[in-house]
Structures are given as C-alpha cells and as structure tokens.
Image (cartoon, rainbow, N blue to C red; front, side):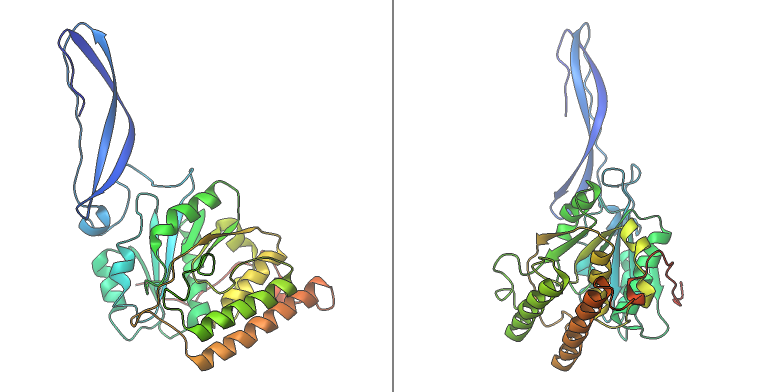
Length: 325
C-alpha cells in the first residue's frame, strides 16, 4: 500500500506483478510505483487476491496473460500410469507463475488417474486406449507439447519422485540459451541413498553412467533421471519415432541429442523413493541396463561411420495413435 502525503500530488504507474504464497494460497499483487509532486493528496492501492487458478478456476492460466520465461512458452508434460495416489501432490507443486500449459498422458491406467486429473483442472489430457509403454507415453507427451506451441518442454513424473520446484531453474537455463537440454540429476550431491534409492539401483546407475561417458565421450553425472527439460528445437530435430516404446527410450534420446550436437546441462535434484512412487522390477532393470549398453554401442559405431544407424536420423515428424477425449 502506498499512501499520499498532505500537500503533495501522487502520480502512480503499475510496473510489475508479484506472486506470493500465503498460508497455502497464492495471491497476485499488482504493485504501484509512485513519485510525489507538490500540489495535492492521493493514495493508491490495487490488490487482486484469491486462490491460484490451478485450484479455483480448473484452468491454470496466468490471469494477466501468458506466463512465459524470457518470452518462451513453457509446457510441462506428465507421462502417467496408475498415478492416482500422487498426482494431486505433484500437480499442486507446479509453479504456474511460469508454466503456461500442462499435458498429462495416461497410458491405460487401471486406477483413477484420469478422473483425478480432470478434477484438478488439467486442461490437456490424452488417454491411450492400450498401454504403449514408458517410451510410447513420452512420444505422445512431446507431440502434444509441440502442437501447443511450446518453446520449452519439461517432463515431470506424476509419481512425485521428482519435485516440480526445480522447474524455474531448469526453464531459465534453457530460456537463457545456455543449454539445449537440462537434466535434474539425483547423483549430484550426496542425497541419492539418503533419499531411499535402493543400493543395487545406485550401483547400477553409477556403473552404467561411467561406461556411457566412456563410450559417448561425455561427462554427465547421470543418464537415468526421468526429470528432463528440452527446447522445442531439440524435440523437432531428433527422430523419436525410431526409439523404443520401453524404458530404454530415455537413453536412446540422450544418444540422439549428443549425436545432433546439442548441449546438456545438469542441476542437482533431491531423491525421493517411497511406497506409492513408481519403480521398475529387478528383472526389468536388467533388460533396461542391457538396452542402455546396446544404445551406447550403436552410437559409437555410428560416430565411427562403421554403421549408418536410423536411430540417429533427424528432422522427422513424430506421430501418435493416442485418443484425445
């Protein structure tokens, strides 16, 4: 609140909008900039408060226009499968002051994931009539995000193993032009095991990452995080349709990104393993690990021009057989 003083005239002009969380509710406050000129008295105050639109209006759109980061449209995609128990917690942590759209792709869940998403006000919900797998789910996510005109696409798992609070940091690293891709790494820092990551998964993560760095001539701290952010240019350039529909999709995508010459940055991410969080079985982990090694070898043979691999084709438009309710 800005008050005038006796004997002076106050001229005011709105110059910014601030967003603050107060007692679990978000309030939008228009702040006035004032300067005083002798002559009269005037006070100015304008406050527009209320619950944030992702709760009250069932449609998380910034009420004063597009949120954006440095003029870039940010779209969060959520590949979902039986995420009913954790979706609400994850969704309500998304920072809608910078996120323009949210896309949820349900991979034929057997629980109430879709119903909960609709109740939360998720505007863009895609349902697969059959389970297409983790990679197939992501293909639908990215196609929809690009169709919405996204400049930045951030994948957030709705099982709440990754906190959406890192979205601003990841978005700004891309919007600034410093990187083309940003990963949230659970290995940077010392929190992976403390956060509940099983020892065998931690060891497998470190061993596979070491081998991949050797074969791909890179230096990432982790290749296996599911928390990733991409510029639209990356998603438009690499050929996702040649990738597996299974979990190895993620590592095939990394190999494609490096082959195309894009830069990957990393931020440290807290690790969170708990009963309701999704996790693949030991047997599926073995299959995934073998697929990771095979992908690295394919990359190496392609870079050495010993084999022309269609995995590394570029500029091919992706497709999906999803249904849009």
